[in-house]
Length: 539
Ligand SMILES: Cc1ncc(C[n+]2csc(CCOP(=O)(O)OP(=O)(O)O)c2C)c(N)n1
Image (cartoon, rainbow, N blue to C red; front, side):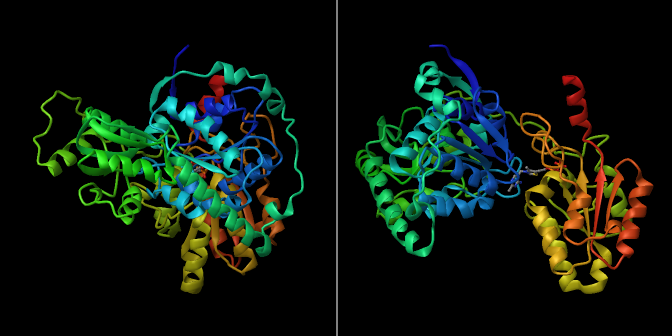
């Protein structure tokens, strides 16, 4: 068997290809972005960057109900945006398999929070798998599609940054990938949609019945979980045992190669008979899980005595060192004397706006004007740092325009002239446009600035609805700011487009628009310099 080296993200794409996925939709977000970019390289699969995660999920539901195995990808906070369809798609179930890849980011390498999305599996009542290396990621992706169809449910595949971005050896299943049964799927000729209103139309009368189906499905999955070969008991030294999953399994194996371990491949629902069997075979039980006490709370609630967050941190990432030191201290044992690889301490390399970045000028001007700036998420969030120091809030994608409205409402006339929102082009498409509609509808008068660098730079230069290209780089519509303004009742002089490299024009436009007694939209346009250079190399 030929072996190849793949990142976790590449392995998801490979697994999806082997599983006969016909449709892939997602919205970029570190650490998940490269999944869809890699899936696009495989033949016969339709892929798209959707405008946001909610839409990607909805495209996913539709495609799977029309018979296409579908992969939907996003980062952890993306699932907040897609939570609405997630919860009800749990009721609806699937026709062909529907797998959502959710990439968590413990330690916030590139995120605004480090929420633990295992909680979504419990609250939306859907199964969740978590692989520990790239080959498992490939296999679990295929498995997730099988489970999705067998149990008539969407399945979440959870990765974390270390799984998504680490490279490890994968043995691809070439036979599965070439199976003739997949030809029809890949030719995008699935069965098509057939009407089933009691299953697909969630009015209360039908949804009440479907909720019962969901509860039964979870009962069945819980019972079956004990026989799933992805939940593995390894009995070695029995003085203590460790229950863990994902990358933490790797840390445990490195820290305590001889320990007994219950490795959970399906992390929701939990395999109770296996947990019981494991607990009888080992002494003290440690739960090794990053972020929330997710397993710990569940397992303690069943009456087991386990040690977890009383000794392990609830924030940040773990490492073999964290696991080794914490468990050794709790066991009152000297640290292993064996030579081990200690992580080198690298100098910190905090991000900064690139030299030549088109976003630089506007932040210098905003700083000099002493304005309150509600910010958003993207490269331009770095405008908060010196020497620009020109951002005052940043919550979530699209939030800048909403927060500016709140400040205007509460702060009145004086706030309007002193507050501006800044938002990137991809973020404006993602969830800023609906905020502009809200502002126009509710009679707001603020100035909203779109920083349009012709790409989604923060996540690695993905095209977006304002750049006029699709994921495959084929030409598409580029949304027109002026017509958008017109559509929400803005007059011609309320929408302005200026060149990012003309500081005087930018400053004049900001002053002029702040003076107006009306809502205004200022688009500052200048292509990302890195994107431009990459494009030139390709040409
Ligand atoms: C809900 C959600 N989805 C995805 C992300 C990841 N993400 C952060 S910023 C960003 C878009 C940035 O693009 P843009 O607004 O064009 O600004 P740029 O980085 O190009 O300056 C994305 C996709 C996120 N933080 N939250």
